[in-house]
Length: 234
Length: 234
DNA sequence: ACCTGAACACCGTTCAAGT
DNA sequence: ACCTGAACACCGTTCAAGT
Image 1 (cartoon, chains in turn brown, green, cyan, orange):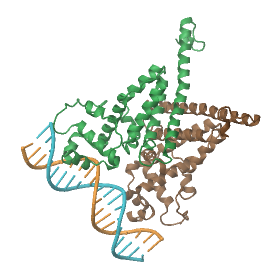
Image 2 (cartoon, helix red, strand yellow):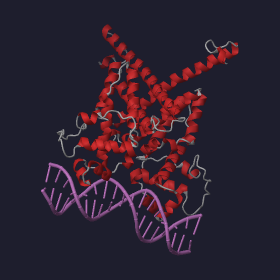
Image 3 (cartoon, rainbow over the protein chains, first blue to last red):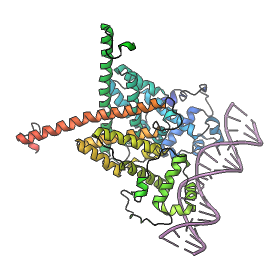
Image 4 (cartoon, rainbow over the protein chains, first blue to last red):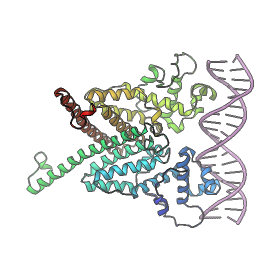
């Protein structure tokens, strides 16, 4: 009885992307437990009953092992949720949309919010544990889109911060849920997307500033004219 | 050993603003327990040990009563956290900054994020329970700022959604914490504020569109010229 | 009406003991 | 190395009993 699920590309593809962690990549290990199997089972439970419904006991039962066995692979529940969060990120980073930088970004944000929204309570956890989650391929994917668009280094940072905060807030508030209550909820969804467009407008303003600055710098270099105010500094 | 605390205006001012709830407003009740006293104690605990450190037992002990006594005033922990969340909102809505609409909004967002950031884990809870929190005076305060600025009805909704998502994401990730780790964290803070400025740029674009639309409508009304496409509709 | 004392069901985590 | 069975400490919530 599950809602429309995105393909579990990240889980089935390769063992959970343990970005940053020094642990060696696990072998497929045809039988027995594995990080990938645990994360997959955890995702299914969360999708059904939410993060608060995910219990180490319930998880172990679904995996057909004793409670202690799960703890042999995952140190604690917090770390397990981090694995799940990274898994969702990796999956969302996989499906790269086409088009101009802003439509690509827009689609990516909406897809990501929708993906996270399928796991009740997950966005709240992710927003509270940003520092331990950001080092993923999603980061790289977004950075690349912005770099190709022409954003400067700091422009990229700023836009990414805004996007990240927005997507977590958006998914946590559950406005994108395609649940059974389709009354005046469509209005909230259009407002949420409107907020995203607002953000993209701001990003466009920023992009013009970044490009203008670079063009001026290049022009000065070509003419070999020292910068008026800080000529002695270079 | 508390961090710089904002004045507890909302708590001491009047009993916790139970927006929407049908419950009658409680009398001061000089002695004994009260919603206001419970919320205040809860805030202190959360500020010290976070939402996860807040325990109904610990709370009751700090209040000097038995566990059951607290439950006589607050139905459950979820509802208690809602009271705390609304209390923080009401407090933040109280200090209205001066200046133009965008600087007022900017200051308000940063103050709000900073206020929430003082209560670890609170932002995650608030972002996960938007629907039960939004009906506060903060909502009114922000709406008023935007209306006076000249935003249309939908423009207000969109800007507010963007602001809300951003502020929760911002405060939850704790970039505004003035904690002991002042290394490269100031950089993250400036990036967070940069994201906010991005959003305000977008809002400015939106405002121009709103004002332009209204001006055109007024001009048509003055000239009594029917609208080309939908003349028969009015 | 308000509070106490004690209980219930459940949770995350640990660990000696088995293979 | 991997798993089982059982325990420990703690939590949210309830409720008969007192005043």
